[in-house]
Image: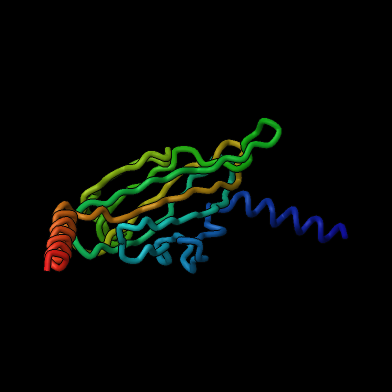
Length: 188
């Protein structure tokens, strides 16, 4: 029994000193096989106007920093929008589940091959808009710091493509044409 307790304490101490890593990640409610590392990033797939939501629980030593990555594609250049936030759990006046300074950067290509930074925003639950020049591969660099007493934290990032104004114009023109056809049919 004593040996088991000593081993458990040793594992807990090593865990607290180890670098941060993702424990649980879900994209739109589906568990992810990626762990947010350079070689195994999360993958949003191709962005659509419907937001995709990535929720991740990370672990590490109190006060340590972490960085994770998520890839996404766009089928055309144009605008995108994203919002991020963190969750805090306080017990006895001490935040034991906390991420400070959550920052999200939007880059081209995949990490670490990105050359162009398109946007930087914080995890303060404020929607950020960004413009991407062409269709292709892009990625997010997601970083933060655990609170001084926290060895875990959770963040969420939602991202979506914003349709171009031409798309809305075509939609309105199509609806107008359908209305014209329906009106002509009624008149006949």
